[in-house]
Image (cartoon, rainbow, N blue to C red; front, side):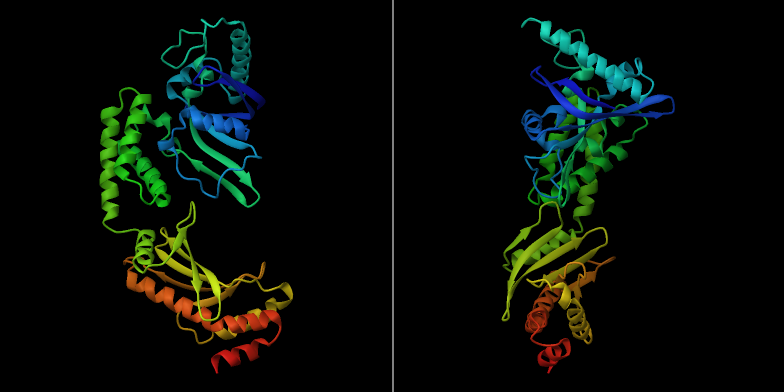
Length: 389
C-alpha cells in the first residue's frame, strides 16, 4: 500500500521499513487486528534482532525452518498492533487504505517534529507515556512480530513467534478461554522443543509467563491458569514418548554418530559397509505415526541410465520382504527405504533396529550392481544375476 514507513525503536531512534502493506481484520463491525507486513535489509534485521524490537525476544521465537538467513537478501516481517491501540486506529480509519494513509501521515509529521525537537524533547517511549510527543502507533514496542521469513533459492526459511500461536488480540478478549491459550502455548513449545531437544519446558513456560504479563496488565492469574493447563497437556503427552525421541534414544544407545537436521524431525547418519559408504536418514513422521529409514546411494543415475536403473531396481525389489528400492526419475537419486506405521501402538528400539540393520545390509549387498549399471559395465539383468546367484 505504501513503499516505506518510518518507525521509532526502543532507544527513540527512527528507522525505515520498506514495501509496507497493511491489513485490518474486522469482525462484525469491530476491529480485532491490524497487521503490517514489510521488508528490511539484513543490517536492519540485525538491529531489530539484537534490540528485540517488535517484542521479538529470544524466548518468543520458534527455531529456523530451513537454514540460516543470508546477509545479501531482504527479510520479510509480519507484525500485529497492540490490541489496546486498535480504537485509536479505528477512530481515524475505517478501511485498510485509510489506515495506511493515516499511518503515513503520522510518520511524516513525526519525522518533521523529531527533526525540530531538542535533546530534552524526546519522543514518548511506550504505550504508558501517550502524553509525550511520539505517537504510540509508530513505536516498535507496540507491535508484536508474528513471523520472520526470507526467500532462498531452495525455498523459504524463517520462523514464527509465540505471538503467531497466541495472538495478542486474543489476550484481552473475555470470550477467549484458557483452553484456547493453553493450546497455543502447547503448540509453540512442542515446535520449539522439536528442534531444541534439550530444552527445559518449565524454563520456557516461566519465561513466557514473565514476558506476557509484563506486556499485558491484568492477565497474570488467567494466563497462569492457561500455562497450568498447558503443563498438564504436556505431561499427558510425555507419557508416550515421541517417535523422534525414541529414534534418538536408539541411535544414542546403539552408539551411532548422528546429526539432527535443523528444523526437521530427521537424523542424518553416515554408514560404511563392505561395498561402499553412503548417507542414511532416519525420519520421524509424528502426525502420521510413522518411522522411515533411508539409505541414499552416493551417486545419481545419469539421464541415459535411468531406464536401465529402473529395470535393475524393479528386479531387485521382486522378492524383497522388508523395504524397497526407489529412484527419482527427475534427478536420478537412488535410495533404499524401510518403514513402519505404529498408529495405535508404540515404536520400540527393537523395531527401529530391525529396520535400520536390514536396510543397511540390503543396500550394501546391491551397491556393486547399482554401480555396474550406472557405469554401463553390465545390463540390469546381468547385474541382478551376479548379485542374487
